[in-house]
Structures are given as C-alpha cells and as structure tokens.
Amino acid sequence: MSLKSKKILITGSSGFIGKNLLQKLLEIGCENIKTFNRENNLSDLGELTEDCDVIYHLAGENRPINDDDFDLVNYGLTKKLCDDLAKLSYQRRRKIHLVYISSSHVNSPTKYGVSKKKAENVIENLSKIGVKSTIFRLPGVFGKWAKPNYNSVVATFCYNVAHGLPIKINDPQLELRLVYIDDVVEALIDAVSKRGTNKLTLQDVPIEYHISLVELANKINQFPKIRSTSAVPPVGRGIDRALYSTYLSYIPCDQFKYEITSHHDKRGSFVEFLKTSESGQFSFFSAAKGVTRGGHYHHTKNEKFLVIKGRARFRLRNLITNEKVEVIVSDKLMEVVDMPPGWAHDITNIGDGTLLVMLWANEVFDPAKPDTFHSELEDI
Image (cartoon, rainbow, N blue to C red; front, side, top):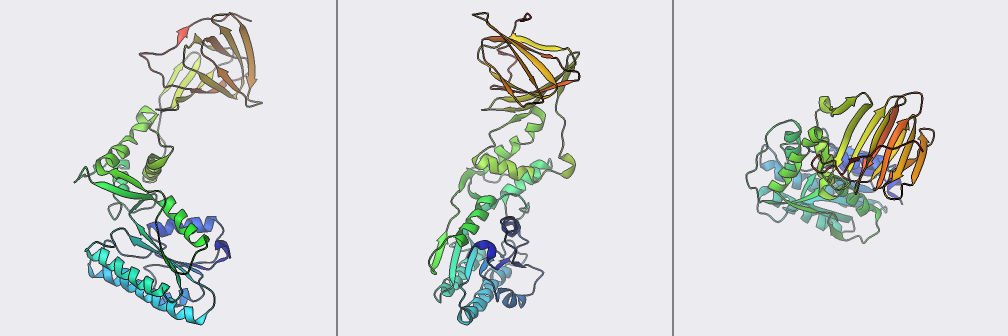
C-alpha cells in the first residue's frame, strides 16, 4: 500500500515539524490525514487512532512553564498513545507504523531528556508486540515556520537579523548539530515508504550539519547586506542554502521588496541585479531606438546577452585578424549571444521601441581592474 492511500494521524501537527510534514503529505497526494493538537482532549486520541495505518507522533514539550509538563506530555501522552495502539494491535490485522520524534538529548540527565527516554522505552515495549516503530533522535532542527525565541537558535538569529534586532552569543565556539526541516520531512516520509521489519528501528536524518555558534551568526549577518551590495554569497547548496531560505522566511511583509541602484544616461539604463562570488554577475540594460552601446573588448571577461524586448544588432571584430561578424537577434526567438574575449563588440537597437537586454558576465565588475577597453567598430 502506497503512503498516499494510507490513513495517517499526526500528533503535534500545528508545531514546527508538524506543519512542514502536513504540507508535504498533502503535496504528494495524501488525503486521509487526521491531526491531534493542543486543542484536542487526551480522550480524543483513542478514537483518532482506531483506523490509522501510520502515526507520526510529533507532539512534545520542550520549554514548558512547569517542568512537570515534560513528563506529563513527552511521557504521558506517548504512554496513552501506545496503550491505545497495543489494544488495536490485538483487534485488527492491518499493521500500524508508529514514527516518533525523539531527541539527541535522550540520554541527558535533564527532565527533558529523561522524559524522552521514558517515551522511547514505552515505544520499545510496544514494538515487542508487533507494532512497527521508528524513532528519530533529532538534534536541532531549523527551517521555515519555526518559532523564534523558543527552541531553535537558528530561528531566533534569523528573526532578529531580519527585523534589525541584536543577537546574543553566550558561547561563540559552541558547536551545534543541526538538521534542516526539508531533510527531516523527507526522512519521515521515507521511513514509512520503505519496507522493513516490525521491530523497533532507530533512524537518523541522512544530512546533518555541524557549525559553531559564531559561524552561524556570521553567516546569517551576511544576508541583509545582499540588498545594499547586490552581492550574494554561495547560497545554492548545503547549510548556506538552508540558512538563507530560513532567513528569508522571517523577513517582514513590508520588506518583501527593495530598491537597487539603476544607472541612467542618454543611451538608456543599466542595472546590476546580482553579484556572486563564484558565478559572476547578472545585469540588464535598456537602449532607446537607434542607440548603440558597448564599443569595447575584454581580455578574459566573457559575457552572454539575451534580448528580452526589441530587436538588436551585435557587431564583433577580432582584434588580431580583423575578422568581422554581425549578429541580429530579437525577442521573437530567445537566442543567447556569446561574447568571447579578444573581440571588440557593440550592440545597437534596430527595433522600433526600447531595447531590453539581460547580461551575464563571468566575473563581478572591478573598477580597479575592469578588463574593459574602448574600441569603436565600423559598419560591416
């Protein structure tokens, strides 16, 4: 039976992990999903579990007002759930799979750690009577929809930096173990989708990050600077990708847009959109009817042009052989024009309206070493 056709219960679905898991299950086509949250009574649990195939037990307490709530929720709720499932396992033939979110602090002497360990022991006893059980001992989890100033230092740092508030670092060299919410959700779904024994299994999220507190703060503090400099750090993979995505989720709604510098003269406008440390620079420019831009060459810098509005003529001349080439492109067909080093080049708007051109250069423009040298081109 595929996960989409299974009947699923999520406890703690209004929590950080629960919200993300619920959204993903809906995306992949799961339609029969029930939830148990703080709004429910404990007596509701038995009825909710009666016809379930999969139970994601995410509900827990990690920062209660009263320390007794650690035991009441983390152990007590789990005990009630397992007691209900034990009864069901004798009454029905359909197998139940229980997936439990535990903590990497499970063996610590804190009340939180002790309560999580007691919950694991109850689940282990349940697995001995044939209820398939999977436990994830998660370290710190971060990502969108986490509650700042609660249980995620990443959420707190991202929220504060996004709102212009200071962040506090008590132990700069403290090393954090972190997993990203998308990887957690994927692991939770894979745990149910894969076949396995009916015994208790301990599983990890395959991708885990290790970072010091000060390094975490330094990375997050870079992100607001993107708006003023247009310089984007490497945020396309790994922890940087996950952190930047998390940071953006905390930007205030009235700051979703921001202005960037635009250079204007009689020829048109030129705007540097994004600058990257490894993948060059993205810009665009406009040109009025009949206007020619360029008239220069590069030794190493190379560029790609894409006309997104209008019609343009590119002229190129080889500096050594004097070979000349003319290229005509327009927005009627999306064609990229490569501009190799060693060729003087310009671009002329030969259309009836304003010309708009996207431009990528393999390096960020450096006024001290521009690698751009004037050279007029004659008609071919």
